[in-house]
Amino acid sequence: NTLIKSEVKELALKLYSKYMANNRGLFLDKTPRYYHITDQLLELFPDSKYIYLTRNPLSVFSSILAYNFKGDIGQMLSQQDRLYDLFLGPLKISRAKNIDIKSRVFLSYEDIVLDPQKELQKTINGLQLSGFSENLGTYAVSDKFRNSEGIDGKSLVLHDKVVDNYLDSWSNVLNTRRKRVAAFDYLNLLGAKIVDGLGYEFDQLKDQLNVKSHFFISPCGRQMRHFLQEKNIFGASE
Image (cartoon, rainbow, N blue to C red; front, side, top):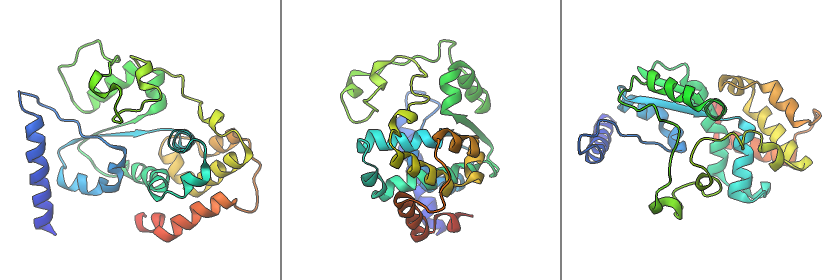
């Protein structure tokens, strides 16, 4: 409905304008779950600048498992919102590379932690930004947020700059055969087209799991496959 879209856009711009007071020229709006409305955002705000951030799918899988569900894979796979994160998010980002957007930049977590200055400069150049100092790359968590639920409390407060300590932490989380087989089935269900489209090597990731190919999908794999079929994730988005 054109009227509804117009009203939504007007409301968003009104809210943004309040935060952009005092001569602030930019407003950053972010949340991982904007993948749900990627197409709508592009339609309503075609002149905005977009940043797409990817991470190794195995790292995403293990991070959700460890941080949100304390290693309980059965509990994780019973949460539909997390299954959307694992499947719909990567699908939407991989498809975004084929959409004509005026100003955008694609970043990966791995590139950022290995060379943060280079990636920051890539972002500044790609989004045609200016007025930034050379001392980028450090941060401080304000007292207001330090003890709140608004930040990732497991590590953010431990550092004041980007670190690469967590690059391969997924291997420590996927510490049982059941978890590794579930991750193996996750990659297979996600598929080479999406994984490669995100900038990762599908076969290499599977090899790193050190799981022999099996003819029958695991119970965890069946649970994920049922979700994909029930929600028609790939069929509705191709």
